[in-house]
Length: 324
Length: 270
Image 1 (cartoon, each protein chain N blue to C red):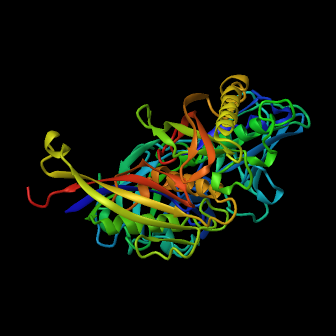
Image 2 (image 1 turned 180 degrees about the vertical axis):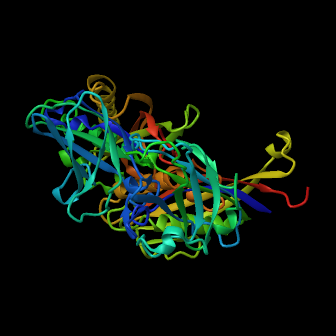
Image 3 (image 1 turned 30 degrees about the horizontal axis):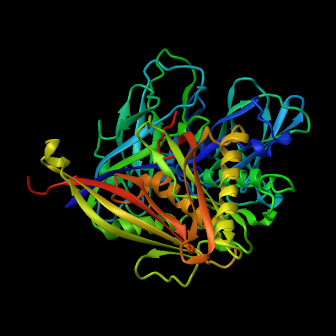
């Protein structure tokens, strides 16, 4: 059985921005507020977004690619006679956005997948609605870039015009959503949970101080504070037949996350803080980043005792039967 | 999944200030820098307020990781935070949203944004109870250090009062997209030794329990600014502690409610 899920990704602000071409010179600008397209007689700017899509499993089949387009509240003055934006996807940006000719117009590792005649704001754009299929251009091991080009025709419009992307809030920025299917196993989910928690153990982060995040059993409990992840059970939900989804199955894994701290000194506070961080990371902040899981919901836990606290989560998955 | 609230207890003079109201902490979806944050607002001049961002509630100078200058206004505005020196985590890209009006000179107003608001309630309960140990007060006879937030196994002396939080309950039924309600069950454990007779230990424990209930549910019921409500659930005991026949223990259970807790995975949020 294979599961299907969507993962939503934010672009890297240090690799995204725009390139301006003026008098044959390419000049890059970085950052969310630099993402813009612009046209004048002397200058053209193109917008670039770089997404880390390596979270997608290597064996996944990409089903759909969408771009959430959010525009800045303030837009450049001027409009062309015929407005147009072109969307390229692929491996466009080098190790950084340098302003090279390949980044400006190269199409050997990318393709024009969509063109639109309106500046969509605050909505998802299916990148397969016009043009080439975008799915082969999504990298499952590295980054996937989006390049937006102004394809407008000036005609009897203004001399200058442009489109600025991204608002001031993080929630007002462009996103990439990739829907894919892949093999569903409990080890895939446990691996992803371990990886997600390990990513938060850095200096100053929510799980700073955690020495070990690993599967249980098999983890080194001698290293404390430690976190052990264990997928306890799987239940296929009968709702499939009731809701007449004959081609789909729905299932629920119960995941146990055990946090253990040393009992030397005042241990209770640090244990409760770690438990709260884990609950927030898995049940909320990174719930959509857990590979293979549609939703991750907190499902209670055991009271902290003797330096050990336990949280449980319901990890819901769904997929399609291969034989209908 | 973090509660955002004014940390009234730690405000100057310990009073609520309606001129500064945070409504949102905007965080990038890449999430590596997401963590508990504590904010301190102070007037920098007659037109501006300085916000400082800390990693811990005690706001130790070494924990300061970001700051921003805010132009005071009576309408909602979005303020971008700037990393302080090279302190980690670098929360560049995070913003705060709210109404930041002019504040009084020299006064500091604080807000908390934490995944463990139950610890804030526990600490505030501990402060309330510690204020009642003087001679003639209702918790006289208990050492100040014996009233603490934490597990009973951390105790060094009795009688003791340990304030602990049980696993948080999340109410998703009223989820309207990006908010939920967080209910934090809190237990206040009272323990006395039975070096004297069990009858006296029982009476002493019961008296302390009654004093705790009266303080939390009645005398100081308006003191909880961090949560919307704090209500009584149940109590049990006094009785011999499990596995500790020389200890008489009782438990007072209450619940703190934090409504409208943001869900951070719900993007775009607005």
